[in-house]
Length: 322
Image 1 (tube, helix red, strand yellow):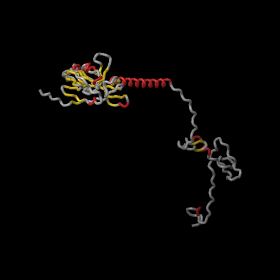
Image 2: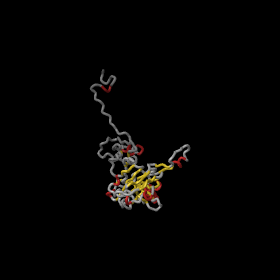
Image 3: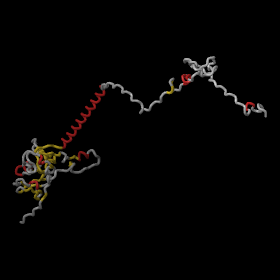
Image 4: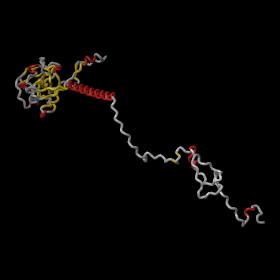
């Protein structure tokens, strides 16, 4: 095949390839409102390649207009380029503290509310203390021993606490009137915590009506017969052994047998030779008894439970042979 003939005439073996095609900048618009770029002072650009189509040669227009065009800005971009990403809270610089505001004055209403709260709490505390005091005062009575009629169990000037609820009673007959079909039976009045027992130290009002309280020991119970023979107490003919009389002056004297009526108690002092008791006053009705002594608190060396002690009976005496 002859040179220059064939399917690819320009690609004949040994024929030099055509020179490369010159490239020129595309015709881009000038920068909007920006100052025109200075012409190429060194003539490095090809003549006749003015992008604007003019005769003067110059550098191709810059692409700044693509970035400066507000229509092409992203929300995180600005004219100066991409903004710095926000820092995490831990890496942010500490902001200067705000100036301390002057303390606002307390509202008068808040102060009045607090004052009312304090006053109410104080009033509740006073009322509670008053109720406790009245409850204790109604239950516990304070007495001072005057005289030596109870020596050696109680000394002159000793202070006692007496429980006034120890012998509390309730009228079942009056209560039964409010409960249909209930017949409590005799006796009509009954003790809530127990009746006075032999050996109890009790305080009672003077039976003559004199405004004076006495402290003695219960010796005889209702329905019993009591007598004294040469200072020894006999209950229904049985001698009574009384350990609380140890150390006291030996009792002397006799007393004829006395039948104790129901609802009454025969009381005597431990110092039998110097005591004004039921031998003179007679049996003491139960409603005259104030309460039972349960604590001695002064003097300090005698602090402790009241010396309530139950006596016991000796063997009954056999009748003398005729």
